[in-house]
Length: 330
Image 1: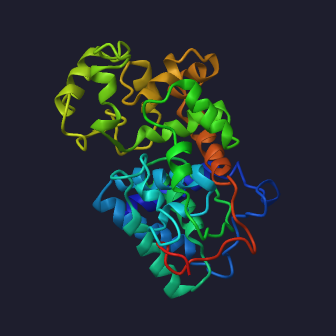
Image 2: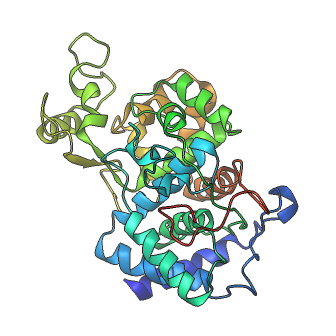
């Protein structure tokens, strides 16, 4: 697995060379930040991830999700990693995160190794951004240069974590509004939703579609019949909240464009997936079809949208800090 990951990594590097990142576009963040202060940073992140994902392929999706849930709360500042303290409630306890976020111990391991080699240099927020990119690459997805230089927040925001992170039963307008609030458009929404080509979701997040989609005790009519029957066997009307099902039933650990093909076939797992196609917004529907037809177009836009998302309100220079331990402030 490790050697396969490196092959994918270098192959993907070659694909993405045509799309370099300019520091001037990203508020002072730039990919070469640790070139001299911690030249081993990328290698350390990749080596820890290769091992973690070889052991648990689902971890790639979990780490991608951590970065997403971090950036949507108060910017990409590693506030998601903070344990509760006397000063604030942890975002880990918020509704969208509780009992579902994973991967904290992998971030801890990366941080510990980086602190040994180049202490007080690489922020936890940058680790999250690099881990998200490398998790995609190790799953067969695109490579992009990650602009670096984020600093870590000294506080978390439990309230915003409950409000800003899109719920699995979101309508298309909910999704558009929540993404717009972060400076992300409909193209970013559809491309980033394609991250659901890897990973799993809990029964509690899709039960409504199976049994009571519109408050009428009926299933969501857009669900393909055989797929619907399979989901019912995993997710009963009550109990089994933590039973899991793949977001992409065809290739759950491979980063590809199958997620979009499944939407066209009525096999999207979450309501927030399906409404990209059925939510009566022409632009999102067209993008689903375009990405289903052409994986290269999806990969290109996903990489662009990940860079854009990773630049949501970063703390730079004297704002924030570089935590020694990602779980608590210095």
